[in-house]
Every structure is written in structure tokens, then in C-alpha cells.
Amino acid sequence: MKKVAVLMGSISDKPVLDKTFAVLDELKIPYEGRVCSAHRTPERATEFVLGAEQNGFGVLIAAAGLAAHLAGSCAARTHLPIIGIPVQGGGLGGLDALLATVQMPPGFPVATVAVNGGENAALLAAQILALEDAGLRERLLAYRKKLSDKADAADRELCQALKQNG
Image 1 (cartoon, one colour):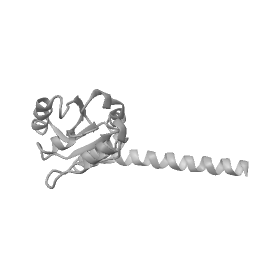
Image 2 (cartoon, rainbow, N blue to C red):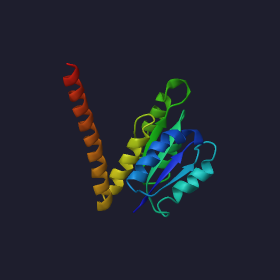
Image 3 (cartoon, rainbow, N blue to C red):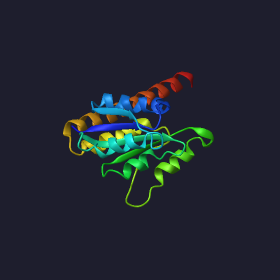
Image 4 (spheres, rainbow, N blue to C red):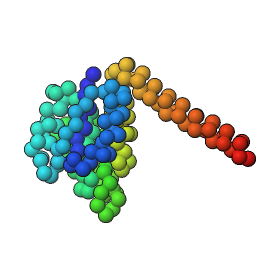
């Protein structure tokens, strides 16, 4: 199975990515997490991205806040799918990061999830990898079934509570 690279512009982004790591763990997807800033460590980020395919990665997740250039910088250096996570920070509540991540020029797409959307980034990576991995596809379907079952249980609990109180 191909791996997922989870890159963060700063270690302060890790709380958002903890949800990403948890979903990847639950789905048994191998991954590697790295701090690779588009601004502070551009050489390390470039080296990692240029070698990603050769090192067994199939998808890159890039999380960054403020100027949020990490995902776009990655997209400029590889043809692998890039999933951007805009991270909330600064005075604009993550809007700056969202716009920087989603507004890419033609030819360099970045699939972008919601601000602080670490869980969805992992699920999108899983969907991409599941195109060529039947076992992962089954785990992903089971994950979704678990979400559906949880919503059904909440509905039953609400209906029960309203009947008792109504």
C-alpha cells in the first residue's frame, strides 16, 4: 500500500493533524508526518516532495496557516495528489489560509478541505488510495458505516428522550 505524507508548516499545526493521524491509524494507512515549512525550510520541503513518489507515497497532505503556501509549493513540485488543510490562525480565523490553499493557478491543483479539516483530509487521502486497494476500500466503507450507525443511535436516543419528556 502506498503511504500518505502529512506535512505541516509548523509544529503548532499538530493539534489539527492529530485527527488526521487518528483516521489514518484507524484505517491502517501507513504515513509519515514531517514539519516542512514552505518559508523556513524550503530546501527540506522541496527535497521531501521531490522524493515522495520514489519513497512510496501516493498522496501528500499539507497543512499550514496564515500565508499557507505549503500545499501550493508541494503541488508545484510533484504530480501526486495534494490535499491542503488550511489551519486557523492569525486575525482572520483561517480565511487567509483557506484562500491561499484553494486559489491555485491552472495546472497545479490542491484539493482543499475545510479550515482545520484534518479528519476529512485523511478520509480524502483514503478515498484516493482505495481506488487501487480493495482492502482499504472495505475499511473505508466500514468507517462510513460506523459514522452512519452513530447518527442512527443519536436519532433513536433523541426520539426516546422526546417521548419520555413529551
